[in-house]
Length: 58
Image 1 (cartoon, helix red, strand yellow):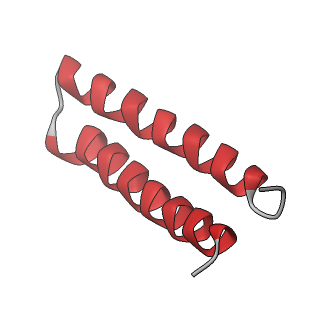
Image 2: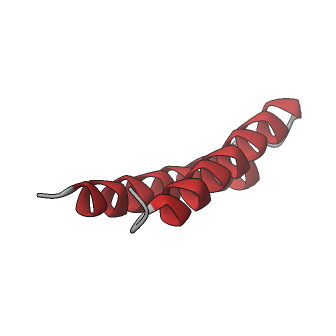
């Protein structure tokens, strides 16, 4: 497995975790904690975007 495959799998895992955290924030926690879960989920999306941008350049 080369570096690009590792970055691809990391991107998929980060996107799945981001969706899970945003879903937890939207549907499970109605109070202030939901905003925190959603913010962290968006952060996971941002990191996944960086991983995807690095794919092919490393």
